[in-house]
Amino acid sequence: GAYRSDEVDENSLLHNKILALRDKSVTYSFQVIEVDFPLFDIDDVMATIKSIFLSVNEDDSRALAELCLKRTLGNPYFVLEFRKMLYHEGLVEYRNDASVWTWNLGNIEDTTMSTANVVVLLQDRMRRLSKYAQMYLRCAAYLGSTFRNTTLELVWKSHGMPMTVGDKPILPLLVGMAAKDSFIEESGSDQYRWVHDKVQEAALSLLGDVKVSPFEIGRTLYYSLEPSQLEQDLFAVVDLINSGNTEKSAEYAQANLQAAQKALELSAFQSASRYCFHGIDLLKTTNWSTDRQLKLNLYSVGAHSELVLGNIEKAERYMDEVFSRGDFTAMQTLPLTMTKVTAMTSTSTLRFNDAVDYCLMILKELDYKVTASRHLVPLETLYAVVKTIKMLKKVPMDFHKHIGVIIDPKKKGIVALTASLNYVAYRAGDSKLAILAACKIVDMTLKYGLSEY
Image (tube, rainbow, N blue to C red; front, side, top):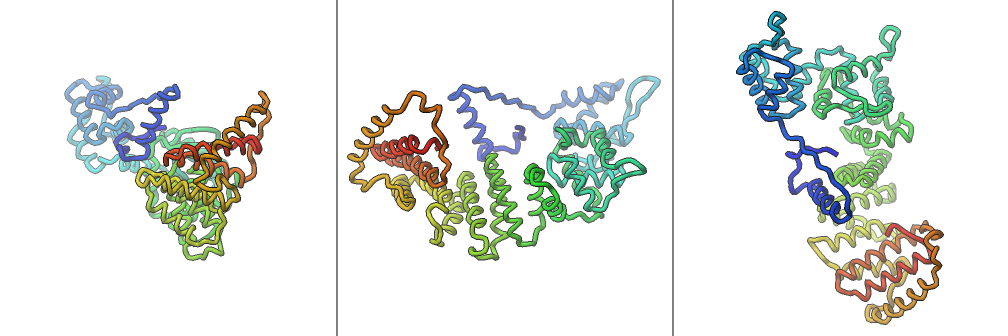
């Protein structure tokens, strides 16, 4: 992945993830390669200028390089765009008689005074394109950092744009134009990406007099794309739907849940949190009896995301909203229960004993008894250890080749909660209960199969 170091400080989630990855690379013996691309200094900009605009006078080249550095702050991509702008605006001139470039520095300084932002430079270049080319770039910009031409075609058609120019399809021509002008580049079969996020930002502001509704684009794609295509473009489509959406639709709330779950799988917790918030907001005028399971899933994913992000109070508000109802079974709220156990043992609370009692209570509600009483744990643990050793001695050597995987959701939930009990009991100082929980997990594994816990 790539990120801008000036936008990631020591308080950011990404910074902590990078530190954790470095630590794990030592523990698990894998290599983390970090490549730092620093900003251009005056010598770098000077070399870039001289590689194209060779001048007789070294001082002229340095003066132009200093102005370029001032306008771009040394961002390599911005430097290249600034250099292109000088050529396209005719601010540099090639002298055939001397085979050198010349320019008027004062004229360049005055002309570029309002273009300190590279987005302005890009917009000026884009506005010289045809109306159809600008519309293509604007529609593509709504689809995110990457997009597929088949998806863009749906958007193009929905705005009543022509599909041909003369007797030729228009979209392939516009794709070629955008790629040739270095606005986009191919990133896969029928897939393209912006060469820089500032290019996408500039494209969004094109043709301001043409009304384009991001929400309408999102809705068009949501109902037009095949399920497999929608899954690929899910984030872009849901982001468009959430932009200016005033329709309190359960269907759009479901789309936000799908996006949140996908973001969670990618460890994009900030995005998952945002999608859950939107989904919950879309359902805030409906009661729990109307979209019961959808609301439960949104609150469950939302609570987990907020907890990972360190927003413990918000996570607890989500959990309280569900648990205060009292009309869900222990099985229905199991994901939320797991989040609550984690919240109890977060660095700000460290309520390990409370977490132990809570795990035992929920396991009992799931009809699974770990211990008859906390006072009997030492005896029960001794019995469980002896029993487990006897069972393991009877296990054939090739047992691992035939062992299955737990499919039943309830059994998987019990194993997961027992694994949490094993951890919190150990952290609470009750090593015997931790061992008892471990024996229970072994017993369930031998009876029912493996689980991810």
